[in-house]
Amino acid sequence: VDVLRNLFSRTLGLGSADKVLDELSLEGVARYIKSDKCKNIICMVGAGISTSAGIPDFRSPGTGLYANLKKYNLPYPEAIFQIDYFKKHPEPFFALAKELYPGQFKPTVCHYFMKLLKDKGLLKRCYTQNIDTLERVAGLEGDDLIEAHGTFYSSHCVSYSCHKEYNLDWMKDKILSDRIPSCDECSSLVKPDIVFFGENLPARFFTSMKMDFPSCDLLIIMGTSLQVQPFAGLVGRYDRGLCCSSQADPLLGLLGFGSGMDFDSDKAYRDVAHISTCDDGCLALADLLGWKEDLDALVKQGKNWCDSPGGKTKDDEGGETADKPSTASAKQQEEESR
Image (cartoon, rainbow, N blue to C red; front, side, top):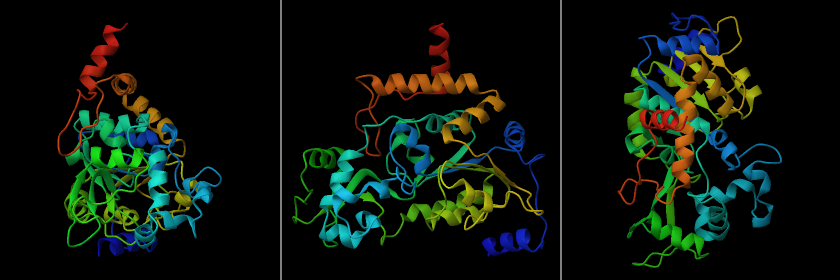
């Protein structure tokens, strides 16, 4: 109902549009964030926020993941993430998983910008399509995140009668040693808890969106072309100011096809398109907010933390950790180094 109401309001001029930005620009977004009216920000992110870390996105011609899977002899590129194909032919997925396994890449400026929003007390939630876990490495924790397409942090036996759970270290050992993971109890295949095509999204995705979006003051979308449902449908649950900063398919975003966004029609009232790399967009917004020094310090401390021997990613079950970067400690270290 909300999606239809918003659609009619935008396309037919029915209902009243609540315009909360004084200007449909990045500057207008920054002024709104600095006002006392913006207290709950939701970020929606996709593969484009991790490309500067060296992880390919999915659909970019020539460089995207789907364009470089010929060596796996797949019937079609998406088959590598199809649950039925995986159960019969798990080898291509685990070969790819070894190449892209969490822990081999570092968070980007964009990841740390979301951590900065958290430190400023403004981040309501981050909804991510990514399975690279870099949001967690940057300092976001379980309650901050809705990992819509799952996570590598846990794995389960695919047998419905068994469904034994395995932790990150167990799966990592199997993948990095080129062994197809099989269950210790029933010998069935074990799959990381990422969502394949043909599987349902985590229940928490659906319960959280019903609670989060009604209280959202600003929705920031980065690094996703919004082509995959039901994730893309989250936009229709929001009817206030919107900032879109995306590497992926900017023309699609500008036209608003399939995204529920309107950047340039006569009825446009809420959506802002800032077309750049995600990192550059975050740097530009941080500069307008007067947060550039905070972000630079946080990025620097985060890189030092990742490079340190004690740098560990904290999973939901606990395990080895080191102090994650925070705005206060990052700024303090930056000042001490001057």
